[in-house]
Length: 229
Figure 1 (cartoon, one colour):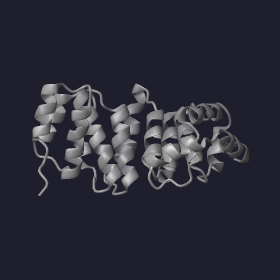
Figure 2: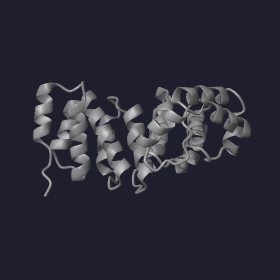
Figure 3: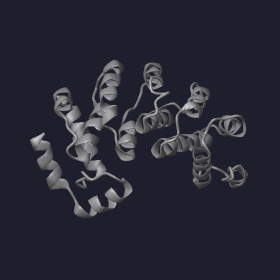
């Protein structure tokens, strides 16, 4: 860890820290090391004794946490061990940046979909902000495929969306689902659903900002926005 911290301090950029910290509210332990460098270091660690690294890994700096999560995605392990490592890591997620970067690093093989889905479903009733966001973002990253789209939409509708970053994660997943499966997603939005007004309108907003949605659909979606009482 001392060696890693020396490297992080050497690679830190003050200007990048100022820019990045402004995008991640409440993150006061950021050094300012660029994400591609963190990914490169994580891949290097994943090729070595990554288990010892993860056992010793701490959260002194934002970048330490990010690297640990990325190592879990890059390590060559079976799905059972990856799930176990990720389960141990989830409580360390306290901002959207670590959440989303780590989730995007985990790539599943077709035969791994079901066990990882079953693992995610253990969090579907969670009321913790970033556990909910993990579920939403992982479903968006890995499960927007024909075999799972119906279940993804059902689970998104059931997630607790009271916290801001949970709501934003659900909205992002819904917008991406609409781009890939407009008919199924629209049926959920137009039918009975349980999204808060904030989550519903955030999803609509993201859909209308997407280059993958037609002008005609954007006009239709804008008309669906819920009026604030």
